Amino acid sequence: MRTIMVMNSKGGSGKTTIATNLAGHYASVNTNVVLKDYDPQGSSSEWLKQRPYALPKIVDLPAYKSPSMRVTRSWQMRLPAHTERLIIDTPAGVELPRFMSIVRAVDRIIIPVSPSPIDIRATVMFIHALKTQLKLNPCKAEVGIVVNRSDINSSAYHSLINLLDNLDLAYVATLSQNENYIRAAERGVSLLELDHPMVERDKQEWRPLIQWLDGDSATPEQNTNDKQRIFSSKNHAIAS
Ligand SMILES: Nc1ncnc2c1ncn2[C@@H]1O[C@H](COP(=O)(O)OP(=O)(O)O)[C@@H](O)[C@H]1O
Ligand SMILES: [Mg+2]
Image (cartoon, rainbow, N blue to C red; front, side, top):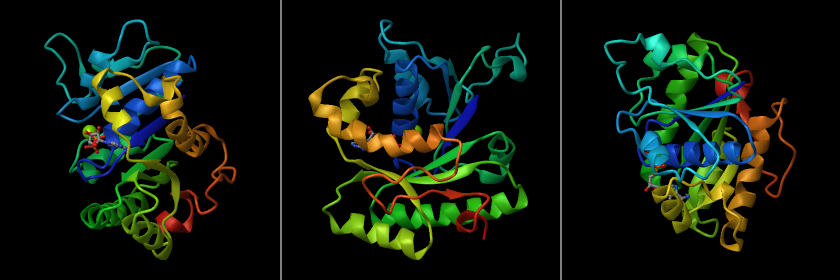
């Protein structure tokens, strides 16, 4: 089983969008997938409620809910047998020290960031806090940044890429701003499971991310953007 956590203390950066689209992707390729939602707003769980019955199943694990009187927390949180991918959505303003016991079991952490000055500032602070926690609590997780809602022709996008380079922070993928994400989200559908020319370019953009998530090695194959790299809790980019 591989555990993937989507995290950024900044709200609106794309955590739920990435968690739900990934869950839909794995379901559509016949992988047993569980979507675990720690956000009290329950957006990932709500997305699942909209999901048409005819689509491949994704198991809902609403971790933000307290267990009912009759069950223990560990019973509430148990994973179905044969789970192959566990995708964890997290809330804005996540309390990192409290989350580190959960992070210990995670294989990949995705940090989405939008190319806007406010988001970038908040995300850089979050990354510094995560670095500190990973030093205190070393774990196996590899960390990758996803630039979300980007317009690669905008100056904000290029400022973000320069900043990531200057800070020695690498990124795995760039996802465009696209209304299709909002429309698909309303229906409990992932863009990655749609077969339509309108979403082909978006699906291509997810490839390096999925390759990194599924790969054994810390180094994804080079892709269309040769600047795309990952960083790991084991290498200098995050641990220093
Ligand atoms: N690439 C994108 N293109 C268009 N809209 C997006 C994209 N990513 C996220 N959104 C929209 O932005 C809003 C915030 O995204 P969300 O995934 O809920 O962020 P978070 O979970 O980090 O708070 C949502 O309305 C979502 O549909
Ligand atoms: Mg969310």
